[in-house]
Length: 228
Image 1 (cartoon, one colour):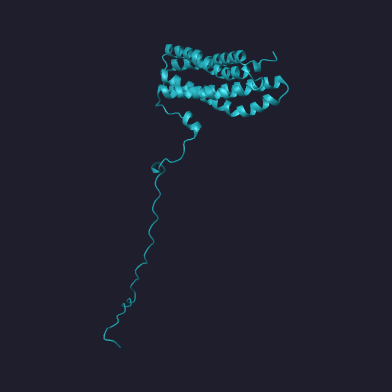
Image 2 (cartoon, one colour; image 1 turned 180 degrees about the vertical axis):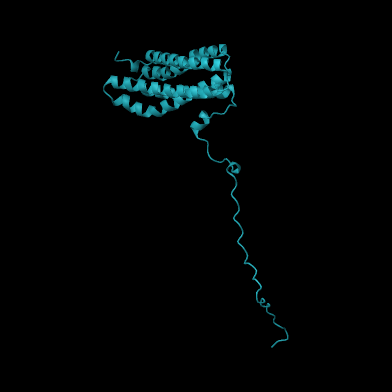
């Protein structure tokens, strides 16, 4: 044997416990959802339908312009039935109904709510109006390809008339629901008298807006009145 002595670890005495094996390191905890980077792309519709209260006049104007542009796409699809100037008039006629409500019906509602001392300012009404308009515009733009195919292949004009007005009124109903949903929460803490006035003024406004838009569309969309 060599001069170097080989040593071995001493055996544990009887009754002594062995040291526990090394425990595996715990997994690194995942970060909270709020701490994750916001790298997901923003959906187009979510960008213009958000309910954030911080807004500007230019942002609401941009949303309104986009809404009328989307509605014009649907009007252009209706105008394909006759082509020519009818296409242009239809593309202008559908947004005209939306703009008529924003220019005539909404200011009238603002006056009534001001007399009732409602806790709403001009920006609240403008935000609700632009959001309602973009709702209608998105729906109409989504229906435009199908209607473009319908109007150039359907032989009976009455079918185009009925379906066209149905689509417009459905878009109006969607916009009206969004408009009411945006304004109602602000009235929750208002006095009972003010809430009662709002409960009467809002349905009257929605009825007036429906009649106004339907009248504008009836006059501005000859493709939908050719059977009259």
